[in-house]
Length: 379
Image 1 (spheres, rainbow, N blue to C red):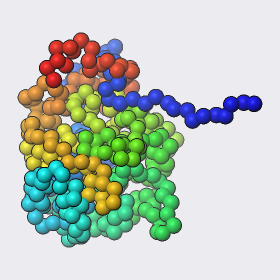
Image 2 (tube, rainbow, N blue to C red; image 1 turned 90 degrees about the horizontal axis):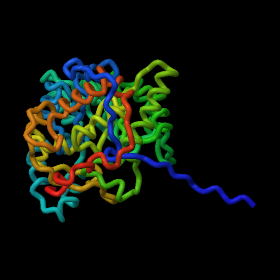
Image 3 (tube, rainbow, N blue to C red; image 1 turned 120 degrees about the horizontal axis):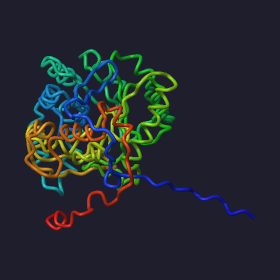
Image 4 (tube, rainbow, N blue to C red; image 1 turned 45 degrees about the horizontal axis):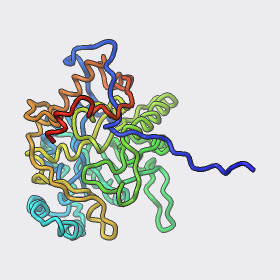
């Protein structure tokens, strides 16, 4: 009698387990092109700020846009529930750790005000900035028309896990193909981590996909729910879906690695794994311009029944300009991220991000510790 087949597991990899191999040809970093395209929009640098209340408000969005990047405003957070979001953010930052989850549940239980949704978007647009906004699937139908009327530039539909097919006996779920046709702007959805789910999402006509389940510094979904795939493997798998879809249909859908990136090296590895852009959270929460006052918290933490995420103190390490372009005041790779990216593109001989996708990567679990005994002893 043949032995029954058992479930087979494959190895997956995170940022600390791989390394980028320098290319056989190098180019001048100043001659590299890092541009990102989402739909018909051209964005100068391939970096997005996460749709988290501690990171992105109207002012941060405007500043990020002026620097060539893109910040995503959370339309289900304090910015659209309160006329005085700064006061609410200060309460969250000052709350004792044992009380903060209960406080967040109370704060986020207040209703979303549609008039504030329009006001926040219009304030960003009046400043001449690109306006990207995020909603959860449950509120997308309700808020999509408000977002379109206020003339936002990009609509992001985001949840812990997003698929093209959602089964429910109680309601007609969100259908992305219908949404794409109903709004005159690019639609980005997330999050997903598998090739098959990513490919199905692309068939709905969306313009970008966020990759990552649970890697964020303030996210605890991996501990609470046990779900997720390390970001290098998740990005490789979703990039494979993008390439297959482009080969078959000739339409390019941006892959955005979302979460788990702490420093320039992580970011560069995401691009070699196949990302077209990255979305950063805790890195930007540390900027002087971030509204979280040196804190960050998971956006699922206010869940009434199953809170996920935790408030963490990240401190304030520099300005947004320092984080993106330097000059750096630290040696841990958490500042001048674009300088790091240009340098790696140069040593890999990649003049564009798409050429970075072709760079070699190796499994290297000792990459951050090899020969670093003195550095490790000082931490």
